[in-house]
Amino acid sequence: MASSNPIDPVKLDKLAEVAIKVGLQLQPGQDLILTAPMSALPLVRRIAEHAYKAGAGLVQPIFSDEEITLARYRNAPSESFDRAPAWLYEGMAKAFGNNAARLAISGDNPMMLAKEDPDKVARANRATSMAYRPALEKITGFDINWNIVSYPNPAWAKLVFPNDDEDTAVRKLADAIFAASRVDVDDPIGAWKQHNANLKARWTWLNGQQFSALHYTGPGTDLTIGLADEHRWKGGASEAKNGITCNPNIPTEEVFTTPHKDRVEGYVRSTKPLSHNGTLIADMEVRFEAGRIVSAKASKGEAVLSKVLDTDEGARRLGEVALVPHSSPISKSGVLFYNTLFDENAACHIALGQCYADCFVNGTKMSPDEIAARGGNKSLIHIDWMIGSGELDIDGIKADGSKVPVLRKGEWANSWSVVKKPIWTI
Image 1: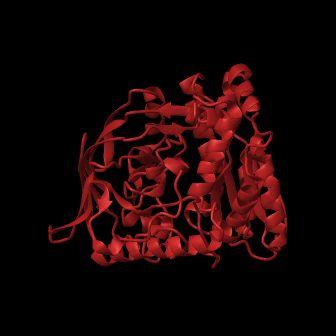
Image 2: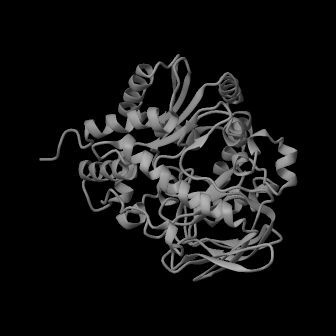
């Protein structure tokens, strides 16, 4: 008989503790704004408990619900899709301005909007992006400590494990989330300390190389990505402007930096599908000229991809480039999560749209104009998609044109990158 509770409550509690103590390093007296789908209520309750034990001032959850979302798409008047609750996002921005921390729980059904009108989806996404900008700028500018973790929604679980009954699928997805988040070990906080040290070794080497560009070659890919002036590589734990060191993404296997928005040339093919706001976009192929996507196609979700690229001028340019070895624990698990938070940590990836200020030398002290002058991109969106595989080679190109191997067949090409074996498998 299937278990009445397929999600291990002990590991769920550890995930909540890691979210507060590692992901956010929430400080005494600090407020917390928390967003989550209704299905994630068990995790929200545990996070609230650990937050208050850590001395949180106020914990304010904001919930979403799949049925309510679908009710809008199927019944709301057309003009509804050009609106968003700006008052809510203005309130969030005000809270962040007062040093509230931000925690998001990912767990929506990745295919929630797959059968809905792509035009409505695009209009709603654009309206939300515009309304959310005051709050998003506090996050992309790294003003505050923030974090994302995940919870196994049953619809998501059945997409990942379609041949299993619902309870079994939820249990498998929960175990995969716990493993990827490093909470299925005796000392999760110690495991994260070790992992952050390994990531730091990688980005320290990359910063020392001072590459001006990266050249990618692989099946369907011949791409040169120029890096922004005065860029810096990051990964794992980072210090926000408020002085708090946090791990924004749990899990994370990447080291990343900012590309120059005008210096991307060539073509690239995605290696994993992208789940974007309830729509699956698969087999993307795009071509860049002078930093801008000039052609794009996909075997699934092409209409949505086209709408995304038309969001604004910056939507066709890159805001992030990230390196992940093909042997990362998430990749080795063999699980396709249909969730960017996980799938981006199984493969090298790039992101359309907004750049991160923290990926510049002294970037958190720069104005938006100063960031733009160094090649940083600005957009209403930030969408990661995966281009890495076991067949991808990457060379770092220095200012004098010389090349240094960075990845070969998806793996780090340098001996410094050898770290301890992954502490989890699925």
